[in-house]
Image (cartoon, rainbow, N blue to C red; front, side, top):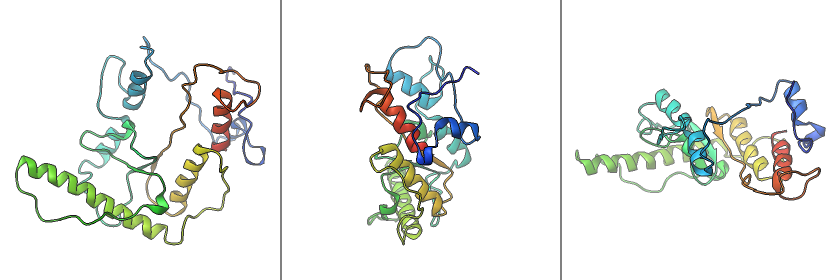
Length: 227
């Protein structure tokens, strides 16, 4: 009772809608996501959302990053051949939500089927100095890139798996398709992160039909991609 979905969210394969998925127990809706005394700043609000901090507290870590750091406190030094990433974001850069106390706790990749091993890097012991510690950290990231690159090449030697068609003109759908490839390949990663941008529209929020821009189009694309 009291829950309504935008009529434009009827998109989806075989007529599936957000409401169908919700009724079938296949969709969760988190309501009233906000905080008291809104600053009305897009940037500060995004910081609060990704860090899960109180509105009067500033944190440099993300809530998913802190969780993963508790699970793997030695990461990224603990990365070993055959490991899968702790978390994967389908994007060019890692979201602050995956920032841990010492390092980013996930891997940002635009296409997992094209992720290659790292290039040449030295593996001789770094000096026991402050500078050496920095060198060791950088090398750990190169080792991570090499390990994950080889793992991806192994998993996707025959290309992507998964025969479910996704809309080719929907950016979010294509990101979710790549997540599906990873899962279908047998990757052990348990956290995947994708984003749909464009909600800072300011106008044309209401529409009875898709209008190419605004929240009508965004909600239609969201429903289409998830369905």
